[in-house]
Length: 217
Picture 1 (cartoon, rainbow, N blue to C red):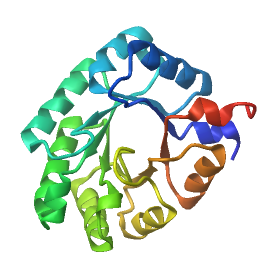
Picture 2 (picture 1 turned 60 degrees about the horizontal axis):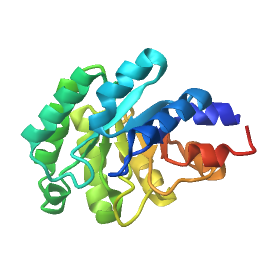
Picture 3 (picture 1 turned 180 degrees about the vertical axis):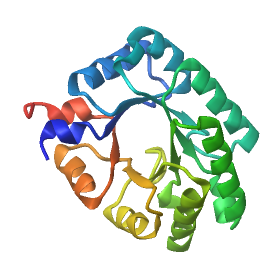
C-alpha cells in the first residue's frame, strides 16, 4: 500500500478544547493536500467548515465526547444538529458507565437510535477500550454489530490509553461482518498507520498526519 493509499484511510483530527479557527483551517488544508478520508472536528466548527470547504472535504464530528455519559436524548439532538450543519460522519462515545454497569442492551439501543438518525451517514462507535475488561469489549462488539453501526472505534484519545494491537485483534474476532474498525489514540507515525491498516482497520484517527508525512511525501 502506498503512502497516498494509506492516507485515504485517515481521519485527520483536531479535537482539542482550545482549537482556534486557524487550527481548524490548518487541519482542513492538510486534509485537502493529503486527501485524507475525512477531517474530524468539534461540533461547533462543522457549519463553518462546510461553508468554507463545501464538498472538498468529508466532515466528521463527535457526539457525547469525550466522556460519553450525556443522556441518549442529548446525544440524539447533537447528531441532528451536526447533520443540519453539514457533517457527513459521526463518531459517538458510548455511555461507559452503562457498560461498566452491564447495561449492554441499553447501550445497544442508544447506538441504534443514533444510527437511525444518521440513516445513510456513517456512525462510528467509540467504546474507550482502555476502561473496559475483555468481556466488556466483546459485549461492545456485539452491541455495535446488533445496533447496525458502521464502525467500532477503540478510543477518544482523551482517556488513559489509546489504540492497541490487542484491542484491534479482539474486535476483529468478535464484530459482525458489516462492521469496520477504526483505531485512534496515540497513532503518530506512518509506520504505526501501516501497522493498524495491516491489522484490518479501515480507518485510523491521526492528529499529526502532516508531521508523519514530513519528508516522506
